[in-house]
Image (cartoon, rainbow, N blue to C red; front, side, top):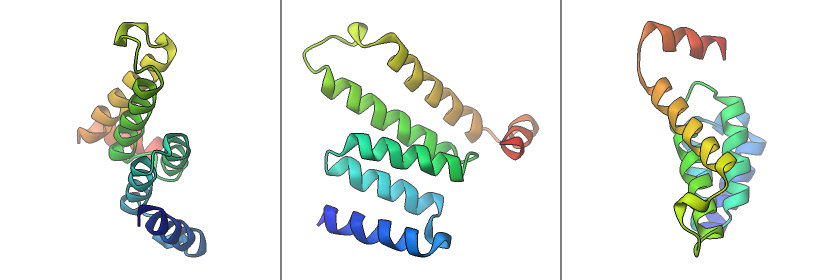
Length: 114
């Protein structure tokens, strides 16, 4: 079911660009995650961020997906032994999501510049 849903959603967004809304892109990334297709989910969310760089939810979803991918790849390793660069990437994505969710004049201007 998830595979069929993600396939239909992907085809719809490719056919009708107006369907590539942040909400649908989040849904697509979530459907890929549910199918254990973490790498594809990361790629889809990175693409979504390129289309909607001001949407903090996309950054947060990408951070969660990357974190999940890191933890599953290192299931036997402790959190402290995760690659530092990857952990920093997740941390920065979370920072960006938090910053974009704050509705201040500064973040409004930053999102306009993105």
